[in-house]
Length: 268
Image (cartoon, rainbow, N blue to C red; front, side):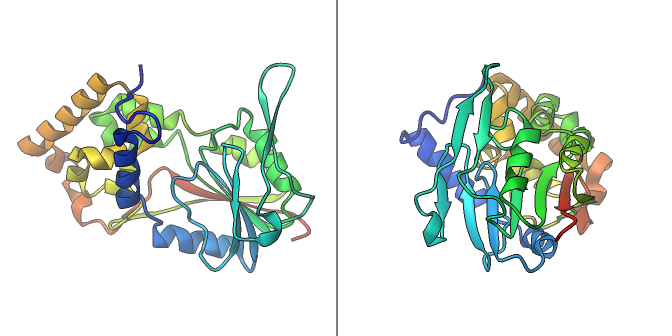
Protein backbone atom coordinates (compact mmCIF):
# COMPACT_ATOMS: atom_id res chain seq x y z
CA UNK A 1 0.00 0.00 0.00
CA UNK A 2 1.45 3.38 -0.98
CA UNK A 3 0.99 6.66 0.76
CA UNK A 4 -1.99 8.67 -0.43
CA UNK A 5 -1.95 11.60 1.97
CA UNK A 6 -1.23 14.13 -0.76
CA UNK A 7 -4.51 13.36 -2.56
CA UNK A 8 -5.47 14.09 -6.15
CA UNK A 9 -4.32 17.20 -7.96
CA UNK A 10 -6.16 20.26 -6.78
CA UNK A 11 -6.71 19.04 -3.21
CA UNK A 12 -4.91 20.73 -0.30
CA UNK A 13 -2.43 17.87 0.04
CA UNK A 14 -1.45 18.12 -3.61
CA UNK A 15 -0.99 21.89 -3.30
CA UNK A 16 1.21 21.38 -0.27
CA UNK A 17 3.27 18.76 -2.10
CA UNK A 18 3.79 21.16 -5.01
CA UNK A 19 4.90 23.89 -2.62
CA UNK A 20 7.32 21.49 -0.94
CA UNK A 21 8.67 20.47 -4.33
CA UNK A 22 9.38 24.04 -5.38
CA UNK A 23 11.11 24.76 -2.07
CA UNK A 24 13.26 21.63 -1.83
CA UNK A 25 13.82 20.58 -5.45
CA UNK A 26 15.73 23.17 -7.45
CA UNK A 27 18.25 22.80 -10.27
CA UNK A 28 21.65 22.07 -8.79
CA UNK A 29 24.20 24.37 -10.51
CA UNK A 30 26.96 21.76 -10.59
CA UNK A 31 24.66 19.29 -12.33
CA UNK A 32 23.59 21.95 -14.83
CA UNK A 33 27.26 22.70 -15.58
CA UNK A 34 28.01 19.01 -16.13
CA UNK A 35 25.07 18.67 -18.52
CA UNK A 36 26.14 21.85 -20.35
CA UNK A 37 29.61 20.41 -20.90
CA UNK A 38 28.16 17.15 -22.21
CA UNK A 39 25.82 19.03 -24.59
CA UNK A 40 28.67 20.99 -26.12
CA UNK A 41 27.46 23.67 -28.53
CA UNK A 42 24.01 22.09 -29.09
CA UNK A 43 21.30 24.76 -29.28
CA UNK A 44 18.02 22.87 -29.67
CA UNK A 45 17.57 20.32 -26.90
CA UNK A 46 14.85 17.73 -26.31
CA UNK A 47 14.32 17.15 -22.58
CA UNK A 48 12.71 13.87 -21.51
CA UNK A 49 11.95 12.95 -17.91
CA UNK A 50 9.44 13.05 -15.10
CA UNK A 51 9.62 16.83 -14.85
CA UNK A 52 10.90 16.81 -11.25
CA UNK A 53 13.90 19.09 -11.79
CA UNK A 54 15.47 20.32 -15.01
CA UNK A 55 19.25 20.26 -15.35
CA UNK A 56 19.26 21.68 -18.87
CA UNK A 57 21.10 25.03 -19.12
CA UNK A 58 18.77 28.00 -19.45
CA UNK A 59 20.58 29.29 -22.55
CA UNK A 60 19.35 26.41 -24.74
CA UNK A 61 16.13 26.19 -26.75
CA UNK A 62 14.37 23.38 -24.90
CA UNK A 63 11.41 21.21 -25.88
CA UNK A 64 10.20 19.14 -22.92
CA UNK A 65 8.47 15.79 -23.47
CA UNK A 66 6.56 14.41 -20.50
CA UNK A 67 4.92 11.10 -19.66
CA UNK A 68 1.47 12.72 -19.78
CA UNK A 69 1.74 12.99 -23.57
CA UNK A 70 2.02 16.78 -23.39
CA UNK A 71 5.03 18.73 -24.59
CA UNK A 72 5.85 22.18 -23.30
CA UNK A 73 8.11 24.14 -25.61
CA UNK A 74 9.62 27.55 -26.07
CA UNK A 75 10.11 26.81 -29.76
CA UNK A 76 7.16 28.27 -31.66
CA UNK A 77 7.14 25.57 -34.33
CA UNK A 78 6.53 22.89 -31.69
CA UNK A 79 3.96 24.67 -29.56
CA UNK A 80 1.12 22.26 -30.37
CA UNK A 81 3.18 19.08 -30.39
CA UNK A 82 2.19 16.04 -28.36
CA UNK A 83 3.72 12.64 -27.79
CA UNK A 84 1.99 9.52 -29.05
CA UNK A 85 1.52 6.44 -26.90
CA UNK A 86 0.07 3.45 -28.69
CA UNK A 87 -0.58 -0.08 -27.48
CA UNK A 88 1.31 -3.16 -28.63
CA UNK A 89 -0.13 -6.65 -28.86
CA UNK A 90 1.39 -7.51 -25.51
CA UNK A 91 -0.43 -4.58 -23.91
CA UNK A 92 2.68 -2.50 -23.29
CA UNK A 93 2.87 1.11 -24.39
CA UNK A 94 5.04 2.38 -27.20
CA UNK A 95 6.34 5.82 -26.43
CA UNK A 96 6.69 7.93 -29.58
CA UNK A 97 7.65 11.50 -30.41
CA UNK A 98 5.88 13.61 -33.07
CA UNK A 99 9.08 14.92 -34.59
CA UNK A 100 11.01 14.14 -37.77
CA UNK A 101 14.37 12.43 -37.68
CA UNK A 102 17.27 14.55 -36.44
CA UNK A 103 14.93 17.34 -35.29
CA UNK A 104 17.12 18.27 -32.27
CA UNK A 105 20.80 19.03 -31.84
CA UNK A 106 20.88 17.06 -28.58
CA UNK A 107 18.70 15.46 -25.92
CA UNK A 108 18.74 15.21 -22.14
CA UNK A 109 16.99 12.22 -20.54
CA UNK A 110 16.45 12.14 -16.79
CA UNK A 111 15.45 8.78 -15.34
CA UNK A 112 13.01 7.60 -14.25
CA UNK A 113 10.84 8.30 -17.29
CA UNK A 114 7.25 7.40 -16.43
CA UNK A 115 5.50 5.72 -19.32
CA UNK A 116 8.64 3.99 -20.56
CA UNK A 117 7.81 0.31 -20.25
CA UNK A 118 10.84 -0.46 -22.37
CA UNK A 119 13.83 1.92 -21.95
CA UNK A 120 15.43 0.55 -25.11
CA UNK A 121 12.45 1.63 -27.20
CA UNK A 122 12.31 5.00 -25.52
CA UNK A 123 16.00 5.70 -26.05
CA UNK A 124 15.77 4.52 -29.66
CA UNK A 125 12.97 7.03 -30.22
CA UNK A 126 15.04 9.80 -28.62
CA UNK A 127 17.98 8.84 -30.85
CA UNK A 128 15.71 8.94 -33.93
CA UNK A 129 14.89 12.61 -33.40
CA UNK A 130 18.33 13.65 -32.10
CA UNK A 131 21.29 14.23 -34.40
CA UNK A 132 23.87 14.90 -31.69
CA UNK A 133 24.64 13.81 -28.14
CA UNK A 134 22.13 12.17 -25.82
CA UNK A 135 22.89 12.99 -22.20
CA UNK A 136 21.30 10.72 -19.59
CA UNK A 137 21.13 11.80 -15.95
CA UNK A 138 20.28 8.81 -13.79
CA UNK A 139 21.17 6.86 -10.67
CA UNK A 140 22.97 3.55 -10.60
CA UNK A 141 20.51 1.25 -8.82
CA UNK A 142 23.39 -0.96 -7.63
CA UNK A 143 24.87 1.99 -5.73
CA UNK A 144 21.71 3.39 -4.17
CA UNK A 145 21.96 0.96 -1.19
CA UNK A 146 25.50 2.21 -0.46
CA UNK A 147 24.05 5.42 0.95
CA UNK A 148 23.83 5.52 4.75
CA UNK A 149 20.04 6.00 4.58
CA UNK A 150 19.77 2.28 3.82
CA UNK A 151 20.71 1.59 7.44
CA UNK A 152 17.61 3.39 8.71
CA UNK A 153 15.19 3.25 5.78
CA UNK A 154 16.02 0.10 3.77
CA UNK A 155 12.54 -0.07 2.23
CA UNK A 156 12.85 3.50 0.98
CA UNK A 157 16.25 2.97 -0.62
CA UNK A 158 15.09 -0.34 -2.13
CA UNK A 159 12.08 1.40 -3.64
CA UNK A 160 14.32 4.17 -4.92
CA UNK A 161 16.72 1.70 -6.56
CA UNK A 162 13.78 0.03 -8.26
CA UNK A 163 12.93 3.23 -10.12
CA UNK A 164 16.06 3.10 -12.28
CA UNK A 165 17.17 0.75 -15.07
CA UNK A 166 20.70 -0.64 -14.72
CA UNK A 167 23.31 1.72 -16.11
CA UNK A 168 24.64 -1.08 -18.29
CA UNK A 169 21.20 -1.44 -19.85
CA UNK A 170 21.14 2.26 -20.74
CA UNK A 171 24.63 2.07 -22.24
CA UNK A 172 23.72 -1.05 -24.22
CA UNK A 173 20.62 0.68 -25.63
CA UNK A 174 22.90 3.40 -26.98
CA UNK A 175 25.62 1.02 -28.13
CA UNK A 176 25.62 2.44 -31.66
CA UNK A 177 27.16 5.60 -30.19
CA UNK A 178 30.35 6.29 -28.29
CA UNK A 179 29.11 5.98 -24.71
CA UNK A 180 30.82 7.30 -21.60
CA UNK A 181 29.57 6.92 -18.03
CA UNK A 182 30.77 9.40 -15.43
CA UNK A 183 29.91 9.58 -11.72
CA UNK A 184 28.40 12.96 -10.83
CA UNK A 185 29.64 14.22 -7.45
CA UNK A 186 26.97 15.59 -5.13
CA UNK A 187 28.04 18.87 -3.49
CA UNK A 188 27.62 19.60 0.22
CA UNK A 189 25.21 22.43 -0.59
CA UNK A 190 23.15 20.50 -3.17
CA UNK A 191 19.80 22.25 -3.68
CA UNK A 192 18.14 19.39 -5.56
CA UNK A 193 16.68 17.66 -2.52
CA UNK A 194 16.69 13.96 -3.31
CA UNK A 195 17.82 11.84 -0.36
CA UNK A 196 21.54 11.70 -1.23
CA UNK A 197 21.65 15.50 -1.45
CA UNK A 198 21.55 15.42 2.36
CA UNK A 199 24.54 13.11 2.78
CA UNK A 200 26.11 15.65 5.17
CA UNK A 201 22.86 17.10 6.53
CA UNK A 202 20.89 14.13 7.88
CA UNK A 203 18.61 16.31 9.99
CA UNK A 204 16.97 17.54 6.79
CA UNK A 205 15.35 14.12 6.35
CA UNK A 206 13.52 14.60 9.64
CA UNK A 207 11.59 17.36 7.89
CA UNK A 208 8.32 15.97 6.50
CA UNK A 209 8.27 18.62 3.77
CA UNK A 210 11.71 17.59 2.54
CA UNK A 211 10.58 13.97 2.42
CA UNK A 212 7.40 14.85 0.53
CA UNK A 213 9.56 16.45 -2.16
CA UNK A 214 11.36 13.15 -2.76
CA UNK A 215 9.24 10.57 -4.63
CA UNK A 216 11.09 7.67 -2.99
CA UNK A 217 9.36 8.30 0.34
CA UNK A 218 5.99 8.12 -1.36
CA UNK A 219 6.70 4.58 -2.54
CA UNK A 220 6.43 3.08 0.95
CA UNK A 221 3.46 2.92 3.29
CA UNK A 222 3.00 5.45 6.10
CA UNK A 223 3.98 3.03 8.87
CA UNK A 224 7.24 2.12 7.13
CA UNK A 225 8.05 5.78 6.57
CA UNK A 226 7.41 6.65 10.21
CA UNK A 227 9.49 3.72 11.42
CA UNK A 228 12.36 4.80 9.17
CA UNK A 229 12.24 8.40 10.36
CA UNK A 230 12.17 7.25 13.99
CA UNK A 231 15.25 5.08 13.41
CA UNK A 232 17.15 8.02 11.92
CA UNK A 233 16.03 10.38 14.68
CA UNK A 234 17.15 7.93 17.36
CA UNK A 235 20.54 7.52 15.68
CA UNK A 236 21.01 11.29 15.58
CA UNK A 237 19.84 11.82 19.16
CA UNK A 238 22.10 9.06 20.49
CA UNK A 239 25.12 10.17 18.48
CA UNK A 240 25.28 6.85 16.63
CA UNK A 241 24.91 8.55 13.27
CA UNK A 242 27.82 10.90 13.93
CA UNK A 243 30.01 8.12 15.23
CA UNK A 244 29.44 6.16 12.04
CA UNK A 245 29.14 8.94 9.46
CA UNK A 246 30.12 12.21 11.14
CA UNK A 247 33.08 12.76 8.81
CA UNK A 248 30.58 13.48 6.04
CA UNK A 249 29.52 16.70 7.77
CA UNK A 250 32.70 18.41 6.54
CA UNK A 251 33.11 16.57 3.23
CA UNK A 252 32.75 19.05 0.33
CA UNK A 253 31.19 16.49 -2.01
CA UNK A 254 30.29 12.84 -2.23
CA UNK A 255 30.27 10.42 -5.14
CA UNK A 256 27.05 8.49 -4.73
CA UNK A 257 24.70 6.76 -7.15
CA UNK A 258 24.23 9.70 -9.53
CA UNK A 259 25.79 9.21 -12.96
CA UNK A 260 25.91 10.99 -16.32
CA UNK A 261 25.76 8.76 -19.39
CA UNK A 262 26.73 10.55 -22.60
CA UNK A 263 26.16 8.98 -26.01
CA UNK A 264 27.72 10.67 -29.04
CA UNK A 265 26.86 9.31 -32.50
CA UNK A 266 29.72 8.70 -34.97
CA UNK A 267 28.64 11.59 -37.17
CA UNK A 268 28.56 14.17 -34.34
